[in-house]
Length: 210
Image (cartoon, rainbow, N blue to C red; front, side, top):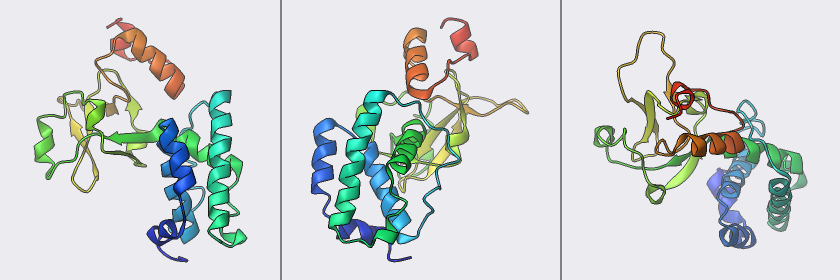
């Protein structure tokens, strides 16, 4: 690697991008920024998230992404990085990564000192203000959704993702998690899953109208 991605991040003045994102309440551009630093450092390939499902993007979202991309590109340029190190950083790459992060990023809701500390609270819905960050975990990103899930993602102190079963699992039963707040009614769940994740949920709970 050219240097560790933390070294890349420290070399760059992020103030303009930070101001842009904080004033608009944006969080995913920070994740793309970190990934870009990891690609430049040689830690990962530019196509490392291509295997993940992308989100459906609306025109307004695409316009916003173009502005974020220009800020990110110009920030690296001002930091003096050689052109060959940032050739991957195109508008299409940025949109491709954002589209995948929007669907696959997990909100890290709780951090505890041990896995056992979380077992009793895994069944309960966690409020948004308990979130400590967002991250993409490759394997958990492949779990399908169910509004009455049989498993739940929990986190340890080092932000490792662990899967906790919520009930007995039958042999051959698919492990499923819930992408959204399970306390919402069926109409709210359908709207969020359709608009945010691009599919109409047909789990048993939704089919029953619960």
